[in-house]
Structures are given as structure tokens and as C-alpha cells.
Length: 252
Image 1 (cartoon, rainbow, N blue to C red):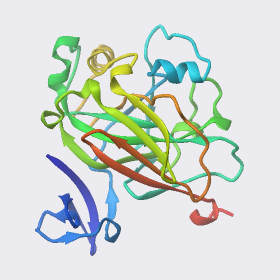
Image 2 (image 1 turned 180 degrees about the vertical axis):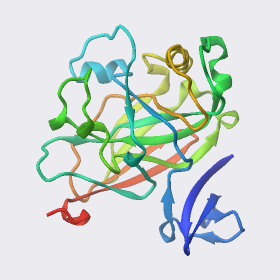
Image 3 (image 1 turned 90 degrees about the vertical axis):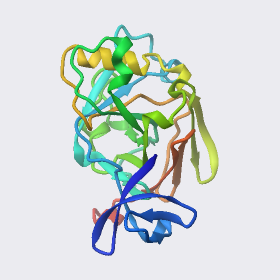
Image 4 (image 1 turned 30 degrees about the horizontal axis):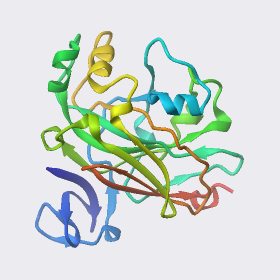
């Protein structure tokens, strides 16, 4: 099942795909642009993977890692489908990152790889923007690169794990103003989902609602104010986001 969360007419609703756009839990239907989209779930800890596709690492001239490159993200970084992400006026290179987001459904502590997928509740699309100007180095992605308000787009749907036939064979695509810019497949993950859960749960407990952003393929490119960025993943939907200016956010 696909389900999301929206704000409409002063209330928050669980919502579902519909031919008209979106169907509310009470049966009413709306167009996608008539509602405010929230992240499909209340997120717990967000784990983000860097350089988890070999070709993307090569694209950034980065060698093989000895262990996964993981960093944490705060809840304020999250924005929903059709939201706006600010591009600061002083930056020269801000890029999208289409990623498969894995949602934990059961507590996981010291979970072996063979049992890891039993702890997955489902999946979402993520677009985790990065500002390369602010990057110190790839082992220390600092707060301004990856924890900015509204810099991580999630949605539009949470999809139950049982409804994804083979999570290792999902194609990811990113379009900027309708032009295909990025394409990859989860078959090319350097550290796959079971290995990530085994690794993380080996030194900390993963809780229901925690989210693992599994990294982005090659093909990242600069985006500017006014660009519409669309991320697609097979079976999960189409996540839309627009780049906005400092002035749009009242920062002049």
C-alpha cells in the first residue's frame, strides 16, 4: 500500500493515490496542488550515506571506502512533496541527490545481515540536496551541507516493504525542468540495505521510524532558483520539488 500525509482545510490527513490526485482518509479527493504535502511518516533518526554508488564516488574523484560513510540529519531538514528548497545566494554549486529511503519498522540491535530485511517497514523517495561550496571533505560533511532547513525532500508516499518485489533492482531517475539528468539502479549500491542495517545496528539500536538514505547514483548537477526537480524510483512514485531564492524565504 502507498500512503502519505497531507494538510488540508486546517487538518492533517492520511492520504492515498487517486485518479484525481489524492484521496483523503475520509473519502474526499483533491488535486495534488490543492493540499500541503508533509513527509509520509514522522521520522526518527535520519542516517544518510555518502558515496554509496561506485560511479558517483568516481564522479567525485573519491576512492574506495573501508566502511560506509554515514552521517546524521536533524528533523528540521525534512520537507514534503511539492515543497520548496532554498538555494542560498552565495553558493556556486548546489545539487540534487535522488535516493532510496529505507524506513525501519522494528527495533534492530546487533542484527545479522541474514535477518536485516525483517526490520524494514517500507520505502520512500528522498531528494537530499547538497551544497558543495560548504563541504570540508567527504568524511566530514558539515552541518551547512546536509542539515539545512528543507534540504531533504521525502515522499510523496510511504510504500510497504511487502509491495516492493525486489528492492535491489529499482531504477532511480532525476529530471530537472523535464530533462533527464540522473539515472541509476539500486543494484549498484556499494553497501546494500542488509549490510547497512547490520553495520548500524552493530553499535546502536535502530528504532521504528528511523530512516536510512542509501546514497545517490552518478549524474549530479547544479540547480538554480526556479528549477523544478523531479525524482522517480520504480514503484515508489514521483517526488516533485522547486528551488527557491533567499528572497522567497524572506532572507534578503
